[in-house]
Length: 637
Image (tube, rainbow, N blue to C red; front, side):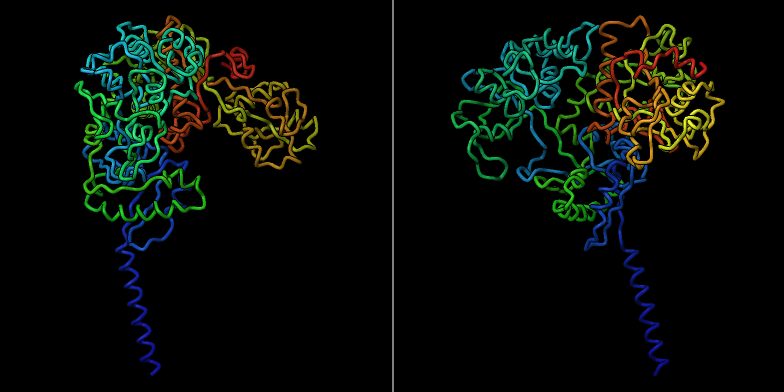
């Protein structure tokens, strides 16, 4: 009897193992690529077991640009994207990407696109053609925005009404502003026309009619009563404008018309009559706003986009993502969920048939909006000195072009020592020189127009135990990261203050020595009671005083151009690089799109720019009192 029982148990065990293996075999895994900054959020939200056999595995990418590469090379299956990322994918391998699920709003789950850019005018003005817009008073959502700026410029340019100035000295930005200023009599176009405050002020003064209809023409910036989607409508209806560029959904809300399948809600302006206003169409006809709109261009929804290998099985993935999204809406960590584009006001809507990114953008007429400058617009030639720098430059150029950074960047490879001469000869426009490369021979004939800037708490400090003696301060070796040029510069600076002269090739780090050189950003990990900072005068102070007591002697990387480059061309280059760091710099929203100042590839540090830089700022020839001549002396250059 005992033998029979053992046999039965053995058979049952074998069956259980076989069943488990079969279930494991049937389990299907899809790899979702996310920027490394949100990897923890992805793991936490995707880890919840589901009732199906489909699982989603999170794969970390440097940023969304690398995620597109990983999806294309089958290191990942899909990625969450903006329409601009679809544009990048379209240029990479359009036939091998497909959009299969979209993030739509609860208000408009059936809308094919996120929004429709429209032109709203008064019925009584009797528009008969688009040419009637000339000289009219225009109301815009804001400078650089899609429906209030990019779409109108794209469409009006195609129709021949909007003309860019021929002056080659003008930047693409100013060409557009001048074109709008000449097309319309007066306008409300708020926002920062340039990241440079002085350039922004000059442009608004030069084209002051673009601010004349604003609530505060002298400021012409947010917040303004007549800016934004509903503000541009108020500008038309309540401020005697002639034409408003905005979105359909805001027209419906302003006049109390139904939105999506929902019932109409009270109008934002009960005094305004819907029958008094019409949509102006591209062919010059008009339509009542109580019916279907004639939109000029549409912006696609954010979406999940995969490679061609999942086209035969995307339906199973869609079910898993639906479950994830609804579960994540109830997550206790709302900030974590938001990183994964989870919003209680949104729903996931599955496409029955995936669509190629290029077809999707063309149907929305959004590709033209991204490309509005045309293929022959002047490009800034950035010289790079290695294949790795070329690769990063190319990725940066693609990201920048899709996100409206103008002028565009073209990458020129000239070898390790060829870039400085290439800029001098005019074969390139720009070279990035790190501090150790800013020698007298290298900078001859060049000038810096921008420098890298660091976060306020990112200065190099020397720390010691609070009981450290003066003799130890003078004689103890240093512990620092020899691969970090900023740490090397700080070590040389401190040694100079200790009356010790070293050159970088003779400078050594001694692990666990009494004096350690780190970034002030790392001070929070230390016990403040036992640790003190070493100041340049070799006095000890509390770690809270790092802003004044530090040994940072960083000469940051500079954006160098030929000395003969002046005026608008110099401004164009400066504008482009400031715009790059505004969009993709440390802490910027676009850092997850392209991590401009992060580690480009594992083990490859400070490619083109420093990994710990935060942004670009105006050139002041020194940072924190660092004189280039003294820096070169310390570095033995």
